[in-house]
Length: 335
Ligand code: IMP
Ligand code: MG
Image (cartoon, rainbow, N blue to C red):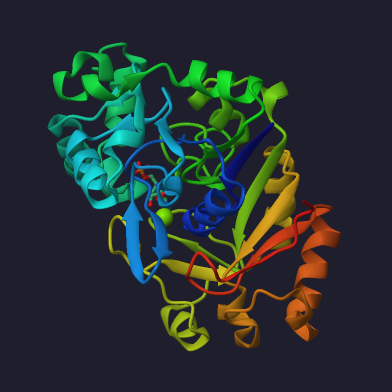
């Protein structure tokens, strides 16, 4: 039995969706459980020529045998949810915890109209901050109050703990990332709750002693949407020149970019007690590795880069993304 947690290493958009979709196919988890804040996330999966940008449905939907769960700590927007259920055809596989929080129109309105949130903090406008505020006030609606959700309701914590007790594999899908954590991030330019591996456990209702692996996902360069510090930030021209241009999956905003930062990587490994690093988009920085699945193609500067990450963080790089597709990956994990 293995419980593996996937969490973001920097400011989100590290490619968690891509890593999760690979693991969902290869490790054949009986459950992929979505943790994290809510639909402010956008996890991109490129599978069989089709691109999915998912804000709520777990990235493991590409495995037909995997149960998809949304943990109690997560917030949902039912409109976004039903659209994604349709896009991913996951109605029969989905379970939503009774206590998942419900984002209403008033939360979205406040997130986009409130100058502090939309201006200073640069929120995604998805209503998650105001909904978590109401949750703290104990006035937020939860999934069990919503008639359209009744067919999906379940006790996610019990399902996961039972699966682990029966020796099955479970993947926990974190969203956002370490330095967007309300507690450990670049406050106040952060999201509305903790987003580290400990919070991911809490979101889905498992205790820390149940966790076997924590994979922290880091991109080969760093991006950030919204405001707040970004060490080594490049100008827009430099970002374009390097080919590091990306747009936000939820907001469509141009992402700010900076080179990989070893100090932040070390901190992220510690805060999350990472046992492995998944390094994505190595092909964008070192094009020779593009689409490779073979570790023998890792040479020269690309190999030095990985060796330096491992030396500075004292954590193994076990998964290396070499392209956008689920299959574009070098998997160095021991079986
Ligand atoms: P909020 O979580 O929508 O309130 O946004 C707060 C900050 O976190 C803003 O800078 C957002 O751009 C950022 N943020 C929230 N979720 C994500 C994510 O999934 N990826 C990247 N940035 C995010
Ligand atoms: Mg994203």
